[in-house]
Length: 207
Image (tube, rainbow, N blue to C red):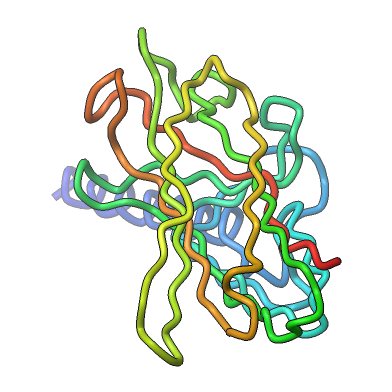
């Protein structure tokens, strides 16, 4: 009987620990911390006034930014406000996505991104003897033709640091498109070695 009481007490104690951990570590996106430190929230949807990182939309009506990655305030290799996109499995990537408006045919549009592999550069992203992942950048015309355009496929190694890329979007002017960046397993290191992809900057620059 005494063992039964002890077991019950232990289970109740563990239950309190789990509830406390959920309350302490989980917050909706509207309450994202602004102080230093690491903070992860999976399955993110950010509103127009609740951008999680260096997402700077110069467009008049920026849409939602969504991701199934993890938000980390930072610093991560000297960057603050990062979304970590470690693939879920060898075959299932993580992503970040948003709608972009290219309606004004008189303007020029440049997509700007900054990506990295952060293995070994943050406490929960251990390094192996080789760390890399693949980023794939797509635009989808889901409202009209249904076509998907591949902008780039980038293999990033943890030794590369933050990699800055620009893409001219003028060929897609006059459309509303869905931008999606996938972080996938693969690269010279192998299919499942240090796949700690991260995005530190995203912007559609208008000129």
